[in-house]
Length: 428
Length: 147
Image (cartoon, rainbow over all chains, first blue to last red; front, side, top):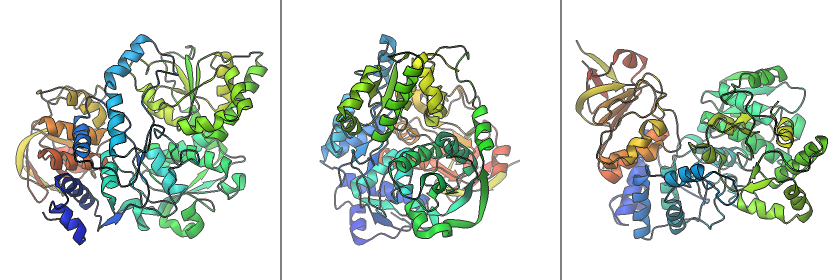
């Protein structure tokens, strides 16, 4: 076998099959893959993994073969991992028989798949998490750690806000890296690969709507990592709860462009350490003002057959909400109901959270009971997966998530507008 | 008359087969998904939004495209169609290969023994020149000859 990458003695022995055929194939795949992207060597993974694929589909026969082989040989990931949320939630989300049937047809072997994940190293049943890096979920990599993560929203947060290093790995490569405890060193694992080619300068009067700012940057980036200046004038320089929420949602929208990293001047770890030295010499300057962002929202097409359709459901939490954001929504919804003289929400409204975040919020009995009194429900599902159901995808769903709008037919409203839609059941 | 183009071999090999061409970036999760479920049949483009490939036979052909729209499941579908023996013989990229397609080709090859030959960076002119059913000869070193 001829590979360009430099391999150490242990790796050569694995490639020779001295640790079994399965690890031999996994390393061969990783090295071949690394060669394609000019990686010079493999480096050791130093933190738990997060996987993008939490669901089984009939077309995943190849993946299932690999999982079965790992289980047969009692091979697990080096460190227990977390995984993205489950694709459906029959317990909490109201569905028609047809919608349930469509989910069962697509994800019929979901339970078996979840058992397989547990056997190869999934941390526990609560580890189906969109925001694994939150304090409650506890898959929080240290700054500078080397990871083998997949899933764009998680990858961009780990790289940008936590200062860890992971490429945006395809699911299967992420799994192989977690099993071997090694990943090819290229791209976002290198200093050069983390340099920014887009210099974003905020020139807005207020803190920009995070969903619109993220989308504007995603559209402009064209593969270049953004270095964003001006956030600190509104949110300060500490990554406290409001900053964490903002960066979580900002990163998620930016990641729709395929990027796995952004820098915030004076705030994110790489930017604090290196400052504007992170900017490439020829970085393009992109000045964003309020007009740019309001103009962008006007370009969003009507996703439904008719603008007169009434919304059937509101989905909030793509990516999943933090405890702080659930508390904020409790206040927003209560206030909107009061303003419209109502006590219950007018349409089914789901707040999507990770199980451990829900447990933490529920511990605040007063606030939890207040929210439950409004008729709002929680779900642990992935909103994007819900909207991929063919019997659901044409339903008029409203959301405050630009990620969900981009990936489905959901209609976007900002938080204030959405709370009004939820209270009245009418779209503006 | 034939014309030659040079690209970067991703998974090298020597073959000659007919071209099937997508001028726009295909979404592999839509193009291959329903086909990856079927057993013993040919791979046919299933994405109604991509008229270049829709309903066209892809198994054993040389799939020519600019690049691929990234998708979370594209690599897993490529692996499955390698297993089923319904994969295209080669994928030629005018631009650069993406990580999802690379992963699908690599894991499909290592796990099933069926290797999709891939050449990356053939250039815009390549995609302007190649048409459906033209004969495409691919060489180990990344040379692509179209006639």
